[in-house]
Image (cartoon, rainbow, N blue to C red):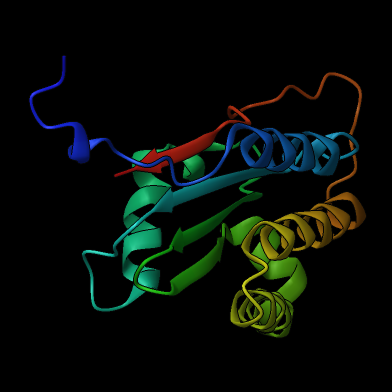
Length: 152
């Protein structure tokens, strides 16, 4: 018997949603040497979500990819904040306009309460860009896990 049955934590995403997003990451990375990570939490402990994304990026070791082509999609659901952070290698190829386009895409989906669909589409488009600039080569290895990082 639970002492406080009302204190049961609700999962941020359903298992089906988690599987859908992990599959989107795997598909996006399939034909590229680039790496995509998804970091989700309820609240952003920073004023600027990009600062939190930078901290998460480093704590996940994303700056250590061989070609500096990792991309982090950071989402703080309850605070309605997000950030997309690409490492130097991919940023040099796509520039600020690409990241702005992806941010607009996420914002539009989030405003329509289409969180999973927005993240999934953003991951797909990032994957397409990574494939263009960092195509898969013989010997490429998956340098970072594809799982979603939840920080509650």
